[in-house]
Every structure is written in C-alpha cells, then in structure tokens.
Length: 114
Length: 112
Image (cartoon, rainbow over all chains, first blue to last red; front, side, top):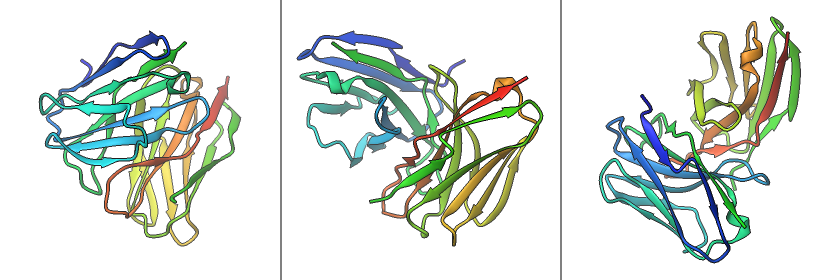
C-alpha cells in the first residue's frame, strides 16, 4: 500500500487558473515537505512543515501556499498559474525535521500549464 | 549558495559491470548525504544514506564519502537492466534547516 499519496497524478491547467495539489502520508511522520522538479532545473526544495507549522519557505512567489488541515496532510495551493509552473511536484515526509531524518517521497503530481 | 553537481550526465554500462556515479558538493560541513533512484514517471526511492567519511553498503549499492574532497560517490555492483533510471545525489547542508539540495542527476542505462 502506498504510504504517501499524491493526488492527482496528472493535472492540466490553463494560465491564470488555480489548482490544489493533495498530499497525505500514512507513515506517522511529523514533518512534511514540498519539492518541485522541472525540465530545466534539478529537484528543488519549496517548503517544510513540522507539526503543521511552517519551518522553511524557499519559494519566492506567494502564489504557492501550503495548507495543512491535518497532521498527515500538506496540500499545495497554486494561484494565477503560469506556464513556467509546469513541473512535477513531489511531497515528502520524515519522522521529525531534524538533520538526520530520512525523507520519503511520494510519486509526484505532474502539472502542465497551458 | 549550496551547490551539488553530479557526473557524468549519462552513463551506459553492460549488465554485470560496475557502475560508478559521482557527486560533488560545495560545503564541507555538510553531514548528510543520500542517493536516490528515480524511474521514469515515478517517485524517488532512497538507496543509501551516509553521514560520515568512509563507505556505506546497502545491498548492491555502496556509497563512498570523502568530505575533505567534497565528494560522494555511488557504486552499483552487478547492475541489471532494471537499474536503468536517473540517480540523484541529495545533500543536507548545515544551515539550520533540513532541506535537501539535489544534483541534476545521472541517467544510467544498463544494457543486457
């Protein structure tokens, strides 16, 4: 059974629209993360949450807003979508947000913005 | 700014031959290094984690860390065609947060 669920697997959106990417983890972890992987750049860190609190934000744009309604959920809302937002977005989690914590990754949501 | 660079960009090896992948990083105080494998259209699978200089083996995968040389490598023993994938090096830098910085990856192809 998958331990980190990301929905949807594929998503197509039009420029200017808004989408929410869903992430749920069933590993009992207390820390969750979002990463982005585009065709032009390596996998890059976006956000980290620990016990549902924002720990780090490396995303310059406020169009990206994480939302944690439950301890094991960390959704990503993206507004005013642009073609450059096209990428695969990976959710990850770890037991705690400490230096040696193993981060486990979900299967990703591939977003295409037309 | 922390940087992680991988080489080669792509590598083709014959089944059963050793495959060696390289990763260099910009900060010698980093303590946390991981190798991930990514099959097409799939998530990341952690292969081996290493925290101190030397060698760490996990099955057919061995990581070598030399922090003084800012270098960590991955060696795959007896690779199979099913090992064909993109291999990513991830480094956690000692900056007070716990994000991983990833290299661009090495695309490995194992031919029978």
